[in-house]
Amino acid sequence: MGCHRGWLWGRCGGGTGLLGTLLLLGGAGWLLHRSGNLPGLDSLRGGTDPLEIARRRLAAGEITLEEFEAIQERLRS
Image 1 (cartoon, rainbow, N blue to C red):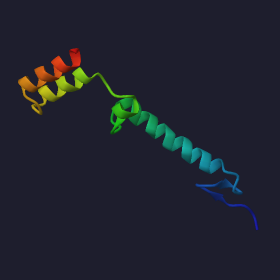
Image 2 (image 1 turned 135 degrees about the horizontal axis):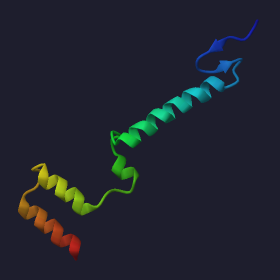
Image 3 (image 1 turned 90 degrees about the vertical axis):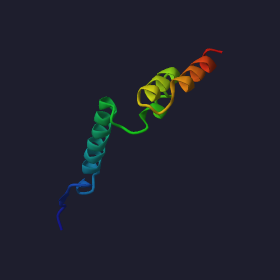
């Protein structure tokens, strides 16, 4: 029996198809990373500036101005 060409394992089980699949998935992950649409990306990068997070939360209405000022004061000390 001859070898078949499967999309996952490649020719005769040589792993070339698997390598291609992994490269394709890695490329898709890289594109998501570059576009900023990857959930939890900040935690993977070590986070962003806490004051910037507070500014975003204030702008989104998640915290009040008083809460923002308290956060800002805590971060200064």
